[in-house]
Length: 119
Image (cartoon, rainbow, N blue to C red; front, side):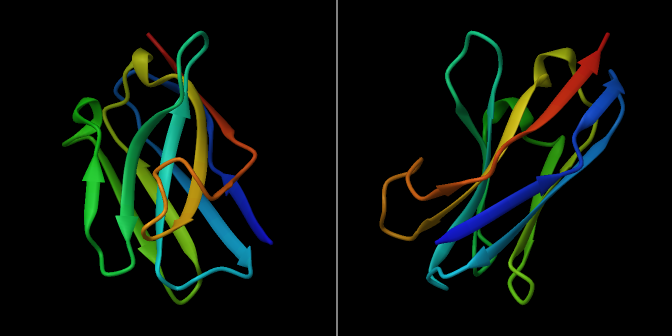
């Protein structure tokens, strides 16, 4: 069983910054990918960014240059630094952990944290 606990969401004005954190606990493979997804009202959940244990990262085009994902393998945490936030970044953000080789979107999920960006 894997538990993922997110923190750091909130309300911010456009142009502002937020930092999300996610802590993983329980039993899981060290060969994993940690990721942040988001889901806005009426839209499908989408990948925001992911990071492999060795540090390789991937970002959605919509957040490149504004968001930075990082992880601490020793403490099993993943953070998402969000800068230059836009109203369209408003969504519930979910932390995800999956084993490498398994399909994106599989694995374990956190409960989600709300990010609201006002114009």
